[in-house]
Length: 203
Image (cartoon, rainbow, N blue to C red):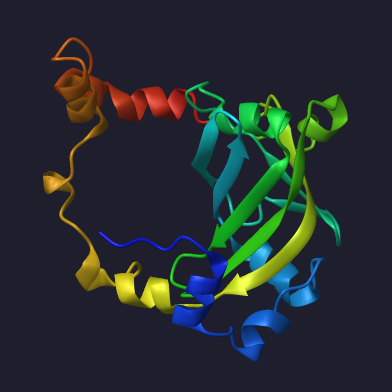
């Protein structure tokens, strides 16, 4: 295979970005971007560190990412599997990106900047659900924020009813765990117990 080895080669292939793709990028949360964030129930969280990169899903009720001010976003870190890959990365390297999606919309919003992990008691209490506060919150200071071209969502048919995959042919978590451990962990029992386990540990 032939590979690109310089920025100059990329420029020759792709040319210059269009004017709208540049003017949409700002360094603060404009009102129209704030409106988008308030409607989003899902964020792709991208982090990087010397040990590697991570892209992790984050989901909650629409608007779960709080706009503290025009330069600051705060995301509660809800319960998960305790791998804390993203949090470890942020502690070592603050470069972080939030990618906001809204079901049914082909528009994506991206916020890039530098993050810190807060354990401020009052802040965490303000994010409590069912009297359960997150153990930490990600505080992102924005360097760049802009909306993303809709082509990827359109091409993928992500929200189209006709594009939905039959869940019966998608490998389950239990099946994947069983495959990774030669059947020692996972399987049907894991999948059968998951809904109740998730319900008890959602917050």
